[in-house]
Image 1 (cartoon, rainbow, N blue to C red):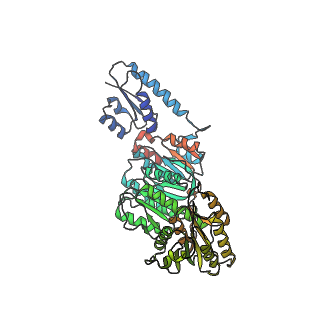
Image 2 (cartoon, rainbow, N blue to C red):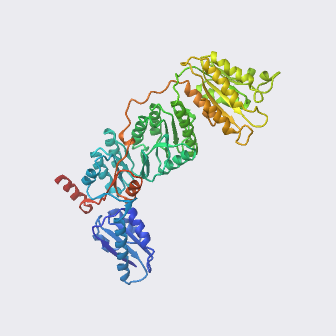
Image 3 (cartoon, one colour):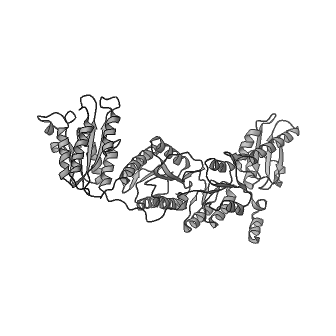
Length: 555
């Protein structure tokens, strides 16, 4: 049996009503309770789910429809549910964020007046009304995030094209995640600050990618959601192109990371071309797509979210190191390794970065000898005849390093520091001494950068952290891996990319939000101490679109 009643003129967001439904369903003598606004879509849902009652024919989109499924005909159940509903709605009305009462308004104009610095509207109203509200926001030159789904494809395209013409961004519809300038929008995580700008057409994909970046010890600048349909053939990646342009102009975002579900092929290629124009390292993850190459110019292709995060963190560390050094963008690289396998891997990695061929013969331990760049294995038999292995006695390597003082064309030195039993007591100290001699012999305009990896553990006699401290205190860059070491070396001899001549949009500096729809989103923003006003939106003219348009013309 279905008992039903209508609460007139009391619009509430759908999530709040879902929570209330669940709470009321736990009431005594009740099997289930459904609480929904009286929109056409919701009425249809009530009918298909078996909660329909003829009284609902008289409900408007501003009315709450309550259906009670129970075994008893006792009408007192309806009164009990009504009382509980009133109590729940009162609690919603008194909701606060943090220690302050949430700023709420009932008119769009009032929202704009209360927050004149607003540059973003977060929309989570019913999909059939979302586009109209988004257009109101664009009229005010506000960026839009549409959490709402069930927005027509035609409306999405029209909104995004209009925003593009105005230099604005429309995220969504069906965009569930964004973190811009430290502002949590919809589903968001508290992220450490860093130099990675994230964007994508996958909400949970963005969250997982960002989480993995944080777990790896790096952070983000922004995370921009696009909506699930943005990379479809029909939409054409309009918002993706805008977001790439925004992050490309943001000097804080030194590395970009992109994630999406499988896009249309033509759109994917268009997006990749746009990534190239940013001039920044970009990690691209198109789920379900396997690239024939690992890298295309500045675009690095990932296969999984974990892979994308790992690549983004690697590039972020390199970019941070690169930006802290004033390089001239010329010269060659010299690698002097005590470990043969380390020399071999470094040679292969560096050859790929520089687009040169590694030495196949390895004559006299020469693992790479191309275009003036050299990687040498000093543990080769050629160097150990009549002298100890360089891990035992680093004298030969130290001399070769010192000699670099007279070779100004060598701008980057790659070295390994291998510790443990059998190795010299303090390899870092002797390495520093030799490198400092080489630097002292050079002109100030011809620096010699040194990049080291340390192989060993804290419990080794030399202690890994002490060796790293010795190197870094002297100014030698210590990195975690050979991929990072060789990539940084390659970047140091490349000309620096000029800073963007475009100014970053104000949206990336500070976000101020007009929230329309889910009250919880506004409360989250207030708790994060972000400027927000909650627009208590309700369908104009009881949801009668014809009458609403007439009223709009009369205003």
